[in-house]
Image (cartoon, rainbow, N blue to C red; front, top):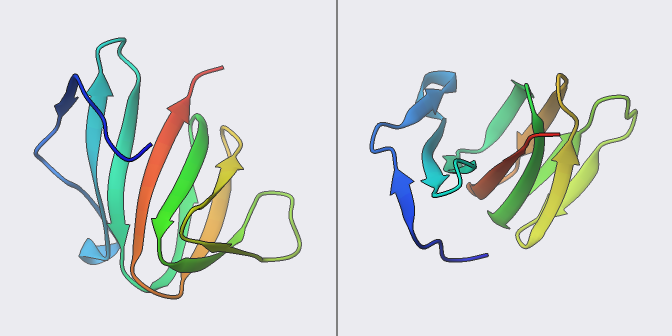
Length: 105
């Protein structure tokens, strides 16, 4: 999805890793939400509370998912799921543009 309608956008940014990763929350009429963000090149580790769908809209990265022993390459236009209550590592090889969907189960 490249465009969202009938949403509320939180103007205050979520800022992580000394400003190297930022995102903004968008909330839909049904109460569900996503974050849209930018990630500068670097190595990061994120924890999750809910299941997440990470859509990489631009850029190149490598990810190490929970329980995985091998890194995967993800490029713009590709996505991956992260289980709830876990953590994953990401190596942003270039500027990453992403959309994160939080999935309540």
